[in-house]
Each structure stands twice: as C-alpha cells, then as structure tokens.
Amino acid sequence: MNFLKKIIATLFLMTAFVSTSALANGKVDGNAVVKAAGETTIAKVEEALNLASTGGDKAAILKLLSDVRQAQKEFRFEKTERLRQKAGDKLKAARDEIEEGKGNGAEALKATLDLYKEAMTIYLAAH
Image (cartoon, rainbow, N blue to C red):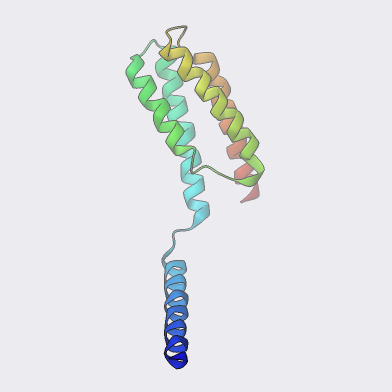
C-alpha cells in the first residue's frame, strides 16, 4: 500500500511539472499583453474624450468608459500602480458626472488621459 501511494504521488508530481512547463512554453509574452492593454486604454479614453467634447451620445461614451475600465485591468505594472489607481478614480468621476447629467465629463477624462499617458511613458521606459 505504501508503495502504491509513492507511485501515485510520483505520477502526480510528474504530471504537474509537465503541465507547468508546457504552459510556460506556450505562454504569450506578458510585456506584450501589458503594452497592448495600455495602448487600448489610452485609445479608448481619447475616443471617449472626443465624443464628450463634441457632445456625443451619452450611451456611446459610457460604453467606451466601460471598455476603458476593462482594458486598464490588464495595464498593470508595479511602478505605475498608483497612477493607474488615480486614473481609475478620475474615470469613475467622469462616469458619475455623465450618468448623473451634471456635465460631459470632459475635464475628468482629460485628467484620466494624462495619467494613463504618464503611466505608459513610465512603463515603456522600463521595458
């Protein structure tokens, strides 16, 4: 019985090692994912800012802000985390302003865009 337990444990460990190395070899470059997420985030904020500045459709702006929120989740880098959090706060303020009809959110979106651009600059300098 002891021998059987050792064989099962060995097989389990071998399977875990093989699976891990297979995943590592097929894994997409993490830097490319973060860079693409940063570029997408900035592009979506710019598009939302343009729509907000020109008096675009409220639903379209909110959809873009939702897209920004999703994209920025992948745009993570230790040295820019605080900037990302501040940008997220500004993004939320813009969204609230638009949803409540208190304005077009352009000022908050401009601040958000500046923060994301600064974060992207720091990220690109480090990579």
